[in-house]
Image (cartoon, rainbow, N blue to C red; front, side, top):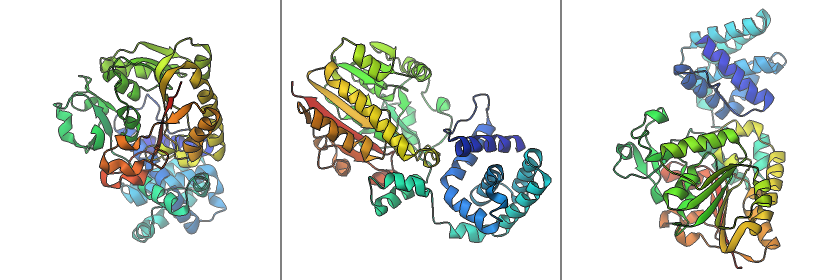
Length: 418
């Protein structure tokens, strides 16, 4: 277990000090993966409160060392939010500190963690569910008021269940979940994906409810020539193909396209073409014209914070600005490769209006030959609140409380009038 905790510390430090996305090395297997993942993710979800606890119960001068602070954070997380025995937690982190720091630091860590253990019940009761730090709240303030940000925070702190898109209603996997509006199956059980029923038969794939909506709201895809831009890892590509579309999938990442190919092979789906290319370069060079362009635009990914709690620590306002500029570059080239009266489906897994509503309204101002397709009539009654006054869809995590929340998402559908 000491080795697992040391690995968790390394990964947690990569997030906090290097601003790297959470990632477990591929050579780690078995129970270590589950424990490390739970420890790091839980620490990130409760970080603001854990930091308050550490600051209150320790000398801030001594805990200013990044490594000391990170060791204390993981230790406090286990003591307050996991079922690990106190003595095992304290001894393990003290030993890690002895190896990586010195006896003075290890003694300090021992004292603080023992103090947290003694006050565990009171500290647990005082937790008000803080998740977002001030910098992340500031990032969201350009799009939402305080009350909305509080609702997003409250709805994002819990680890989400697994959603799948399924092609076979007779599959036994249907018995393991709840059917959501428009057909997404939300599994009630957790486990390894490749050990779930009918994985090898290729009748379902992992896809969050929000991410599945853009394609589900399209009509008459059979035989349509569709460009799937920024396609990997391929959930929407699979939807398009299973609906009879002729799909060209483009993505800049060779490794992510490999995953897309593997997913499509398992699902026994064959795209017209798979191209590894930068979206801007492809749009500048292609001679093809498409009936539909699906742009799942590169973005800050702030809407996936339920699954990736490190986003609150690593994403900044500059990330939103940079991605918005890239989105504008791609959108500017879309009219050149769209057939007359063709459709553009634009979506992002971002919470920020700069990457959603504002981006599309700016595009429309520069491209008056495009019109908004109102998506509201395509939604069932229980999802009508997802549509805004423009006919766009904006999903925030707390909009779907009765179904167990969902990822933040934005969707717009535009049609060329010529």
